[in-house]
Length: 212
Ligand SMILES: N[C@@H](CCC(=O)N[C@@H](CS)C(=O)NCC(=O)O)C(=O)O
Image 1: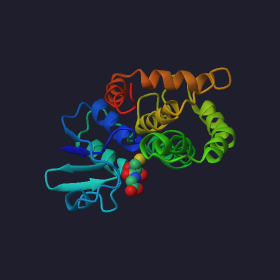
Image 2: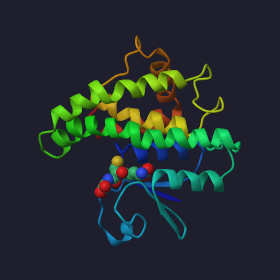
Image 3: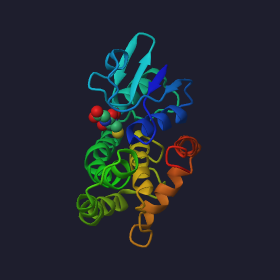
Protein backbone atom coordinates (compact mmCIF):
# COMPACT_ATOMS: atom_id res chain seq x y z
CA UNK A 1 0.00 0.00 0.00
CA UNK A 2 1.25 3.49 -0.84
CA UNK A 3 0.02 6.75 0.68
CA UNK A 4 0.77 9.83 -1.42
CA UNK A 5 0.84 13.32 0.05
CA UNK A 6 3.18 15.78 1.72
CA UNK A 7 3.09 16.71 5.39
CA UNK A 8 1.39 19.88 6.68
CA UNK A 9 -1.83 18.83 4.92
CA UNK A 10 -4.30 18.05 7.71
CA UNK A 11 -5.85 15.39 5.48
CA UNK A 12 -2.55 13.62 4.88
CA UNK A 13 -1.79 13.95 8.61
CA UNK A 14 -5.16 12.42 9.54
CA UNK A 15 -4.58 9.50 7.17
CA UNK A 16 -1.00 8.91 8.33
CA UNK A 17 -2.16 8.91 11.97
CA UNK A 18 -4.97 6.47 11.08
CA UNK A 19 -2.54 4.08 9.35
CA UNK A 20 -0.18 4.22 12.33
CA UNK A 21 -2.99 3.71 14.85
CA UNK A 22 -4.09 0.63 12.91
CA UNK A 23 -0.53 -0.65 12.74
CA UNK A 24 -0.54 -0.86 8.94
CA UNK A 25 2.56 -1.46 6.89
CA UNK A 26 2.74 1.03 4.02
CA UNK A 27 5.00 3.21 1.90
CA UNK A 28 4.69 7.01 2.10
CA UNK A 29 5.45 9.19 -0.94
CA UNK A 30 5.32 12.94 -0.12
CA UNK A 31 3.60 14.18 -3.29
CA UNK A 32 2.86 17.94 -3.26
CA UNK A 33 -0.73 19.28 -3.52
CA UNK A 34 -1.76 19.92 -7.11
CA UNK A 35 0.76 17.44 -8.58
CA UNK A 36 -0.12 17.25 -12.26
CA UNK A 37 1.75 14.09 -13.26
CA UNK A 38 -0.49 11.65 -15.15
CA UNK A 39 0.40 8.90 -12.68
CA UNK A 40 -0.79 10.94 -9.67
CA UNK A 41 -3.85 12.25 -11.57
CA UNK A 42 -4.85 8.63 -12.21
CA UNK A 43 -5.07 8.29 -8.40
CA UNK A 44 -6.39 11.76 -7.56
CA UNK A 45 -8.13 13.25 -10.62
CA UNK A 46 -8.12 16.82 -9.26
CA UNK A 47 -4.60 16.66 -7.80
CA UNK A 48 -5.65 16.77 -4.17
CA UNK A 49 -3.65 15.00 -1.48
CA UNK A 50 -3.81 12.41 -0.04
CA UNK A 51 -3.97 9.71 -2.69
CA UNK A 52 -3.62 6.00 -2.10
CA UNK A 53 -2.98 2.75 -3.93
CA UNK A 54 -3.31 -0.86 -2.82
CA UNK A 55 -2.06 -2.93 -5.73
CA UNK A 56 -4.25 -1.94 -8.69
CA UNK A 57 -6.80 -0.16 -6.50
CA UNK A 58 -6.52 3.64 -6.55
CA UNK A 59 -8.45 6.16 -4.45
CA UNK A 60 -8.06 9.68 -3.12
CA UNK A 61 -9.57 11.66 -0.22
CA UNK A 62 -8.69 11.00 3.43
CA UNK A 63 -12.23 9.88 4.28
CA UNK A 64 -12.39 7.41 1.40
CA UNK A 65 -8.90 6.07 2.12
CA UNK A 66 -9.56 5.55 5.83
CA UNK A 67 -12.93 3.96 5.05
CA UNK A 68 -11.15 1.51 2.75
CA UNK A 69 -8.39 0.48 5.16
CA UNK A 70 -10.81 0.28 8.08
CA UNK A 71 -13.03 -2.12 6.11
CA UNK A 72 -10.08 -4.15 4.85
CA UNK A 73 -8.17 -4.38 8.15
CA UNK A 74 -10.66 -5.05 10.92
CA UNK A 75 -8.15 -4.74 13.76
CA UNK A 76 -8.39 -1.48 15.77
CA UNK A 77 -11.49 -0.15 13.97
CA UNK A 78 -11.70 3.62 13.54
CA UNK A 79 -15.33 3.61 12.40
CA UNK A 80 -17.67 2.14 15.02
CA UNK A 81 -20.07 -0.61 13.87
CA UNK A 82 -23.02 0.54 15.99
CA UNK A 83 -25.19 2.80 13.77
CA UNK A 84 -25.52 5.83 16.05
CA UNK A 85 -21.85 5.79 17.03
CA UNK A 86 -20.81 5.36 13.41
CA UNK A 87 -22.97 8.29 12.37
CA UNK A 88 -21.50 10.49 15.12
CA UNK A 89 -17.94 9.55 14.11
CA UNK A 90 -18.72 10.47 10.48
CA UNK A 91 -20.36 13.74 11.65
CA UNK A 92 -17.30 14.84 13.59
CA UNK A 93 -15.03 13.95 10.70
CA UNK A 94 -17.21 15.93 8.29
CA UNK A 95 -17.47 18.83 10.76
CA UNK A 96 -13.69 18.85 11.06
CA UNK A 97 -13.06 18.67 7.30
CA UNK A 98 -15.54 21.43 6.47
CA UNK A 99 -16.66 23.76 9.30
CA UNK A 100 -13.44 23.64 11.36
CA UNK A 101 -11.20 23.46 8.27
CA UNK A 102 -12.72 26.65 6.84
CA UNK A 103 -11.39 28.58 9.85
CA UNK A 104 -8.07 26.76 10.36
CA UNK A 105 -7.43 27.00 6.62
CA UNK A 106 -7.96 30.78 6.57
CA UNK A 107 -5.51 31.18 9.43
CA UNK A 108 -2.87 28.66 8.31
CA UNK A 109 -2.91 29.79 4.69
CA UNK A 110 -2.66 33.52 5.37
CA UNK A 111 -0.22 33.42 8.28
CA UNK A 112 2.00 30.47 7.29
CA UNK A 113 1.61 29.11 3.74
CA UNK A 114 1.36 32.41 1.84
CA UNK A 115 4.24 34.25 3.55
CA UNK A 116 6.57 31.29 4.22
CA UNK A 117 6.05 28.97 1.28
CA UNK A 118 4.55 31.13 -1.50
CA UNK A 119 6.47 34.38 -1.01
CA UNK A 120 3.15 36.26 -0.87
CA UNK A 121 1.57 38.52 1.69
CA UNK A 122 -1.27 36.72 3.43
CA UNK A 123 -4.71 38.24 3.96
CA UNK A 124 -4.27 39.24 7.59
CA UNK A 125 -7.85 40.49 7.91
CA UNK A 126 -9.25 37.10 6.83
CA UNK A 127 -7.01 35.27 9.32
CA UNK A 128 -7.88 37.70 12.14
CA UNK A 129 -11.61 37.33 11.43
CA UNK A 130 -11.36 33.53 11.46
CA UNK A 131 -9.55 33.64 14.80
CA UNK A 132 -11.81 36.23 16.44
CA UNK A 133 -15.20 35.19 15.05
CA UNK A 134 -14.93 31.79 13.40
CA UNK A 135 -13.14 29.73 16.00
CA UNK A 136 -14.91 30.63 19.29
CA UNK A 137 -18.28 28.95 18.51
CA UNK A 138 -16.45 25.89 17.17
CA UNK A 139 -14.28 25.60 20.27
CA UNK A 140 -17.32 26.10 22.51
CA UNK A 141 -19.15 23.32 20.65
CA UNK A 142 -16.22 20.90 20.97
CA UNK A 143 -15.81 21.83 24.66
CA UNK A 144 -19.44 20.73 25.16
CA UNK A 145 -18.90 17.41 23.34
CA UNK A 146 -15.84 15.94 25.05
CA UNK A 147 -16.70 13.25 27.60
CA UNK A 148 -14.61 12.08 30.55
CA UNK A 149 -13.07 9.32 28.39
CA UNK A 150 -11.37 12.04 26.29
CA UNK A 151 -12.64 10.35 23.10
CA UNK A 152 -15.40 12.06 21.14
CA UNK A 153 -17.35 8.91 20.23
CA UNK A 154 -17.98 5.65 22.04
CA UNK A 155 -15.24 6.10 24.66
CA UNK A 156 -12.52 4.91 22.33
CA UNK A 157 -10.39 6.30 19.52
CA UNK A 158 -12.24 6.86 16.25
CA UNK A 159 -11.72 8.77 13.03
CA UNK A 160 -13.52 11.67 14.74
CA UNK A 161 -10.58 12.20 17.12
CA UNK A 162 -7.94 11.76 14.42
CA UNK A 163 -9.66 14.26 12.19
CA UNK A 164 -10.09 17.02 14.79
CA UNK A 165 -6.59 16.51 16.22
CA UNK A 166 -5.00 16.54 12.75
CA UNK A 167 -6.85 19.69 11.71
CA UNK A 168 -5.93 21.56 14.91
CA UNK A 169 -2.17 21.06 14.40
CA UNK A 170 -2.11 23.74 11.70
CA UNK A 171 -3.50 26.31 14.12
CA UNK A 172 -0.56 25.60 16.41
CA UNK A 173 1.81 26.17 13.46
CA UNK A 174 0.11 29.54 12.97
CA UNK A 175 0.63 30.42 16.64
CA UNK A 176 -2.98 29.94 17.75
CA UNK A 177 -3.41 27.85 20.89
CA UNK A 178 -6.65 26.74 22.53
CA UNK A 179 -7.15 28.81 25.69
CA UNK A 180 -7.24 26.22 28.50
CA UNK A 181 -8.93 28.70 30.82
CA UNK A 182 -11.89 29.06 28.44
CA UNK A 183 -11.92 25.55 26.95
CA UNK A 184 -10.29 23.25 29.55
CA UNK A 185 -11.72 19.97 28.24
CA UNK A 186 -10.88 20.72 24.62
CA UNK A 187 -7.34 21.88 25.48
CA UNK A 188 -6.69 18.73 27.57
CA UNK A 189 -8.22 16.53 24.88
CA UNK A 190 -5.95 17.96 22.20
CA UNK A 191 -2.85 17.61 24.37
CA UNK A 192 -3.73 13.94 24.98
CA UNK A 193 -4.36 13.30 21.28
CA UNK A 194 -1.15 15.00 20.16
CA UNK A 195 0.83 12.97 22.73
CA UNK A 196 -0.28 9.65 21.18
CA UNK A 197 2.63 7.83 19.52
CA UNK A 198 0.90 8.14 16.11
CA UNK A 199 0.83 11.95 16.29
CA UNK A 200 4.27 12.24 17.89
CA UNK A 201 5.69 10.32 14.92
CA UNK A 202 3.75 12.24 12.27
CA UNK A 203 4.50 15.64 13.80
CA UNK A 204 8.16 14.71 14.22
CA UNK A 205 8.37 14.06 10.49
CA UNK A 206 6.80 17.48 9.77
CA UNK A 207 9.23 19.39 11.98
CA UNK A 208 11.83 19.88 9.25
CA UNK A 209 9.22 21.45 6.93
CA UNK A 210 8.33 23.94 9.65
CA UNK A 211 11.99 24.84 10.10
CA UNK A 212 12.31 23.16 13.48
N1 LIG B 1 -11.59 16.23 1.37
C1 LIG B 1 -10.21 16.01 0.97
C2 LIG B 1 -9.45 17.32 1.02
C3 LIG B 1 -8.06 17.21 0.40
C4 LIG B 1 -7.44 18.58 0.16
O1 LIG B 1 -8.14 19.60 0.05
N2 LIG B 1 -6.12 18.58 0.05
C5 LIG B 1 -5.43 19.83 -0.27
C6 LIG B 1 -4.17 19.97 0.61
S1 LIG B 1 -4.56 20.22 2.30
C7 LIG B 1 -4.93 19.79 -1.70
O2 LIG B 1 -4.44 18.79 -2.15
N3 LIG B 1 -5.06 20.91 -2.42
C8 LIG B 1 -4.48 21.02 -3.73
C9 LIG B 1 -5.44 21.52 -4.75
O3 LIG B 1 -6.61 21.78 -4.40
O4 LIG B 1 -5.00 21.66 -5.90
C10 LIG B 1 -9.61 14.94 1.90
O5 LIG B 1 -10.17 14.68 2.96
O6 LIG B 1 -8.61 14.32 1.51
